[in-house]
Structure formats: structure tokens, C-alpha cells
Length: 341
Image (cartoon, rainbow, N blue to C red):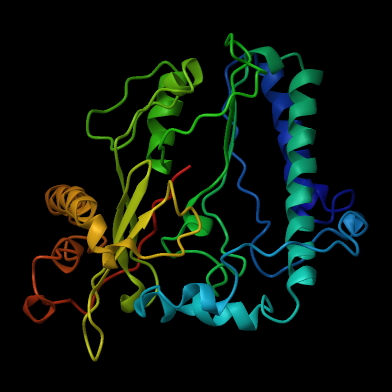
């Protein structure tokens, strides 16, 4: 990005300038193009573009209803072992919430401006009416919810991400329709392949998202797994989510830990303030979600690739195997989580 440093010293707008020039060059070739830009913002270190200092100056922010340590007392002890727990304090969500959120949103504002540069370039180069635009993120941010900071954990603020699809060729284009369907990042690859007119391999986990563009009331998944095997072993978790419920199994049982089940009735408790696994009235739903979870574990055992050492997690996440019968390897390699949209 050195070529853009003089006019755009902050990386966010330099990405927008690069995208603008890429579109212009692609137009001249007369061939289809695919442009993917992954913005550094709003990752740490927090360095918002100073040209936007006035946008959120002196603004105050309403804390979420599940803000703070008290709103996380019912959550697993395992979830509090990684850096997400200490970052509630070390990143100053507890002491300087408004200023932290000002700088966070200022970084996001820069991304908005850069995306605007790219959209303007599509129009200026005459390709806006034949270019599909997809905007999303790799993870959400906890921002003090439940007394956590950062990401990774399987709770709503971390696992929900924005997903905006704009296909100017479609009759629904510009109608700002909203779908409540359950989707995940596994759906991006089959969607992009379909849009490019290419076949989708049968072994892909995800599904094409575009039927939801046709009918926002449609559904493409009944359930999806929610996986994190990054960070300390105690923080590794596997869950399964439906449109209305989420089940999370914290498998770690070494030392003085005990494996924990969490069940959230998202339709009634979107802020995950109550662990419904402890509610006898939710026993039928708990059993149903356990069944979906067990099926996800079985799929992991069957489909885990023989590299990256993912295969042992099929045993570790099996809730029917007592911890002392599991044999964790010392070579487990951290992986990535799966999010939903």
C-alpha cells in the first residue's frame, strides 16, 4: 500500500483507493473480476484515522443489557480462562467505556468511507449494474458484554456478524429486505461459486445464500455447528445453533474443572442472560439440542482432515466420553472458529 501512503496514510482508506484503482484497471480488460478486501480495522492496536476525529467526539454510548461481570456469572468457568476475560479490564471497558467505543466506532466509520470509495468506483467505471457486492466480517466483538472483551467466545456478540448482499440484477435489489434465516461463514464459498457460474463441490459444508435473496422468509439451514479451537485448551468449545436455540459444550475437565453444558433460548433470551440447561422445563429442548450436537461431533469425526491435527477434537468434544477416558494430545494446533450471520 506504499503507493497510496501520501494521500491515504491510514491503511483503511488506502484499501479503498486500491479497490478504486483495481476496478478501473479491471474495466479496461473487459473481463469479469473478483475483488476481496479484508480491512485491518477494527483490530488492535486502536489507531483510528485522525481525519475522522470529530465524528464521535464527546459521544456517549448506551451499555448493552448484558454488560459487565455480573451478567457473566452464570457462564462457564472455562470461558473465563482466556484473554477475553481479562480484556474487559485491560482494554478499559470497565473504566472508560465511552472513550473505548468512540475509537472503535471511529475505525468502523473509516471502513464505511472506504466501502463508499469502492462503490463510487463501480458507478464511475460503468460496472455497478453487473457487480454483486457482499459485505461481512470474520467475527463480532464482545465490547464488554458478560464482562468480556475481544472475540472468539461462542456468545452472540462475538459470533454474529453483519451480512449485506447487493445484486443489482435482481428484482429485490434496493428493497432493503431482511432475512432472519440461519446462515454461516461456510456459506460464502458455495455462494461465490454459484454467482460465478461454477459447480459447488458436494463435500462443501455450506449452501448458496442467494435463495434468501429470492425469498427472505426462506431457510437454508436447520442448524449449524459453532466451533472454537483457538486459544487455551480450557476455552475450546463446540456448540450447535438453530434459529431459536444455542447449545454449547465446554469439554475441558482437567485439574478441578468439570465439563459444562449451556443452553440459551435465543428467541426469548437474545442477550443470553439465562442458562436454560439448568431449567427442568427445558429438558425436552436440551435433549433435542444434545442430539444435534452429537450429530455434529459424529460429522467432525468422519470428516476432519488428517492434517492440522483436528481429528483429536472429535474425541475431546464427545460429551458421552468421560474426561478421564479422553487422551488429549500435546500437539493440538489452534484453529479458527466458525461464525454465523
